[in-house]
Length: 143
Image (tube, rainbow, N blue to C red; front, side, top):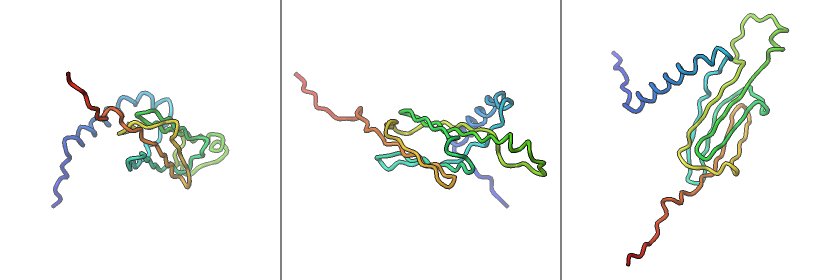
């Protein structure tokens, strides 16, 4: 007998949030076919935040990355409508269309020093973290 897997309250809320986002974006999906959002890994080593995501089959010119101090947006588009119209397909399951993903960052980053590399279908983004000056300790003399 398998026991049901219990989700933490935070995971349940995140799941509901994802469902609401999906429902609210439905009217726009009728305008253009969207790909499933690519999975990603994000981690920090103290100096940089790193993001790696698999987006195979895309060309560099079709990938857009926008870095702000507190978020990163990754979008891409694969359009082969001319190529498709010239062939008689038995199956057509590979994705053609676009995706858009915005990732909130856990730390403020320096967008001017950010970099990205795309190789073998894997996009790697490096985002230098800006030191948090607000937590700096200062001595106040009381008179």
